[in-house]
Length: 436
Image (cartoon, rainbow, N blue to C red; front, side, top):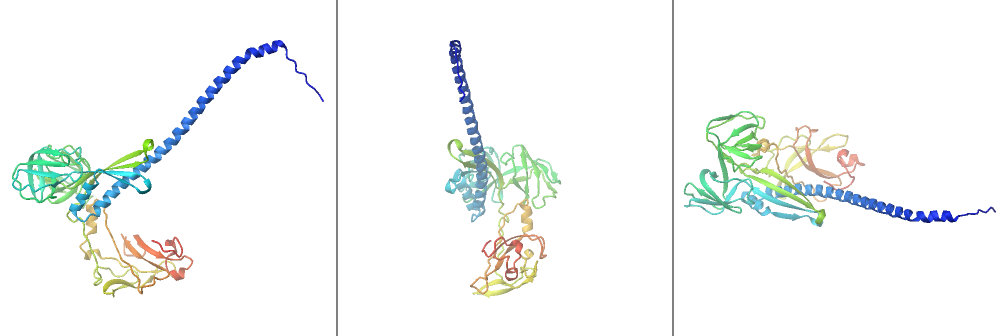
């Protein structure tokens, strides 16, 4: 075994003892630096986590705000009548709605630019009205002109308390029932104007356009409706005819009444999270409401005959009475697509109804909500066939069997049994399952 002898002189010990203090100071400084770095790393990590959480919450708050508008639109569209629509706008103002399972909230604030009569003004020189919601901060009222019913009335002064407005009228007022609509009226300039180019401008007399919204209004001129993109002081820019958006040609006589139709500015605020992590996003919608004229038109076929239907494009169809009610029955099918697949198709002849979807679509500037409904039954009943497919097809490009369209069907099929189910395999996501 080899040994090792370690020799340390007294001088070496003295040198080591003299250095011990500086080593200790160096260690302390190093520890402080490492602690500071660790604290910074923890802080940076925490900031990154909070930043991600804040970004996600902000996005969710934005989606909640969008949901608020869709909720308000749905409640408005499904009201029973015009008065009920206005009541619903007023009810939703300043309301906060909470989603189930604490998935966030949205708040709705409604600011209409039209009024409703509060009390009958007959025999008086004043009119008390209200906005069915909050009073818009940019709505300016001092003196001007109103349309109530089919007539026009001038006012010289206005006082307001909350959503209630008292107009000092220039004449004694006739009878108007409560909830009668009141519209603001501007006047065109004192010379004739020809609007003959899409997106042309319309000039109004100074101050008369103050009650009009700044964006996206609908106006009535000589019983015809037009839209504008923006109000720039006394000029309405971007005038369009919703029925003919690519064509425009009309003349506005001097001092013509320009009537503002129903319009609301709707604020929808999405709220997600709580405390320091709470995120809010507000979206402001400038919305012209549907006008009363032709607002909702309904066609309901009781199938007394097939006079409202085209000839069958696929298969055959006939009227059949079942339990006292008449229905359109699929009496035959034709082959479609792959061998063994069959189907039937018959289209509504809209020209035989009172529903002019094309005009309504154009009037709404190509933004239109509509319902299409069908009731489907089986004969004999019960039971339902092992494999079936029935539904409704809408917005057909043409009456050709392979035309593009949208459709909703309910079905049960099986791609493994193409000759048994007779349903095209490419539209069957799951085998042997009831689905929509």
